[in-house]
Image (cartoon, rainbow, N blue to C red; front, side, top):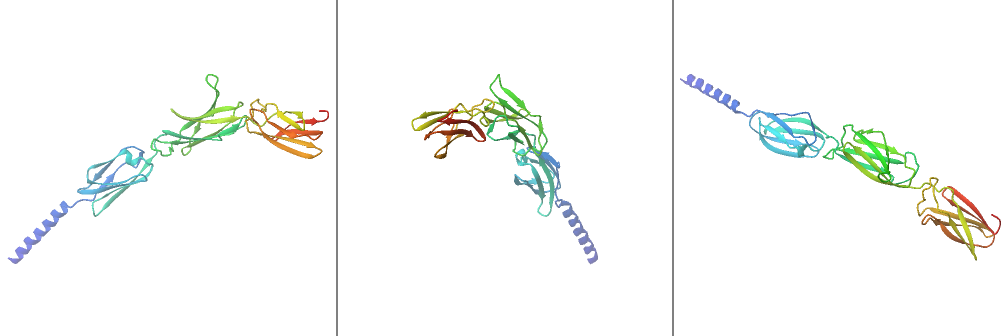
Length: 297
């Protein structure tokens, strides 16, 4: 009788263990694409049974939520807006399943445009540097190569002059070029275009070094009044006001100089006069005429 009781007890315990094993929660597993684009919704399928906790860990977002193993988990576009490596985890309290995926930048949707310098002399080769950085709509650097065109636009419609560079392919999201400055002073618009996107910056073209600098002198009592003709560069552009013109006088008292800024296109000054003198004029590396006071010219 005792032997029969032990047999029944063993069978009961074995069946109970089998039922408990069949009802135990199986660990979750996750399945999703290895690569997705920034701002693209992601569906994560899961397997297993029971309740579990889902974790999303990325460069721009960290989140967790509870889910039922076997259900599909939806990751919103905002949660994967930042490009980079992401990790998803599903834990049922005892075991965790981990899967990685990568978010790539989307196509270019914004241009960051830099131009240097803001003022440039006319007639200079490769004088203007233009650089553009291509970003997607989530401000990720758009690494996919894309074609950017740079243009320099001078003058007013319909007589505007447009000079375009050959299309430049972006490299790691960046494209650049160098442009020549024009022959005429004034504002020039530098334009960068990518498809329907464009950005503009304005560069002021100014006259180059003075050319054919010429001054005149007028004797008034114990002073001599000096004045240049309108100061222009070799292309006929007026040299900017504020450019320094140096007048130098050599007489029996020695050498004296005066630096006079150009105002309204000309430079003026006066110097003391103590007899015959030689007066010269210069601006930068450009030398003008010499004036002889008190003798033949």
